Image (cartoon, rainbow, N blue to C red; front, side, top):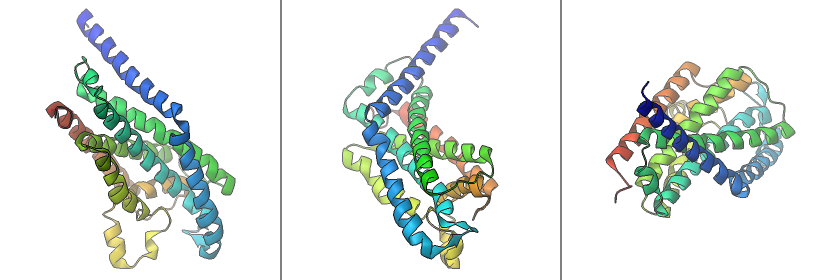
Length: 263
C-alpha cells in the first residue's frame, strides 16, 4: 500500500474516531436527558402495566406478563433513543452551521454516516442496558439465545439511527425533527407487539400488524430471551438486514447530492 493511501486511511480513521468520541461525549455530558428518562419511563411501565395490570392479564405467551413485557420495553427504549440521538445531533450540526466542517473535510460521506450511526448505536445500547437493569428489579429475564439478542438489538438500533439521520437531512426546522417520532414512530412502536402478542388480535388486525417492521424486530428480540415469537425469526432478520442496507445507501446518496446540507 502506498504512503498516500496509508495517510488517507489514517485521516479517515481519525475523522471517524472524532465523530464517535464527540457523540459519546454529547451523550454523557447530558446524561440526565439521554439516559435517565428511559429508566424512569420503564420503571413506570413495569409498575403500572407489569405489576398492577399484569396481575389481571396473567400469562402471555406462556410466561409471566412482566417477563413477556421486558424485552418489548427494552427494544422500545433502544428504538426511540437510537433515532432521537442521531436526528437531534445531525440536525443540530446543520442548525449550528458546523456541518460544513465535516463536508469539506477529506472524509467520504459513508464514513460521516457511519460515525453518526455509531453514536446512535452507543446511546441505544447504553439505554438498553439501563432498561435491562430496571427490568431485573421487577422480573427474571430468561436468556434463550444470546446471539439473537445481540444481533437483533444492534440491527434495530442501526436501522433507527439511520432513520434519524435521514429525518435530520430533510428537516428544515425543529418541528420537522419531532414530527416523525410523534406521528409515525410512536404509533408503530405501540402497535409493534411491545405490550401484547398479536395472537390476541382478530385475524384482520394480525394481517395488518405483519406490515409493521417494528413487530418483527421486537419479536426477534423477544425470541432471544423467551424462545417465543409471533413471526418468523429468519424473516425478521431478513427485514432488518434489508432495512440497514437500504437506509444506509439512501443516507449516503442524500449526502452525496447535498440534500438538506447545501440549501
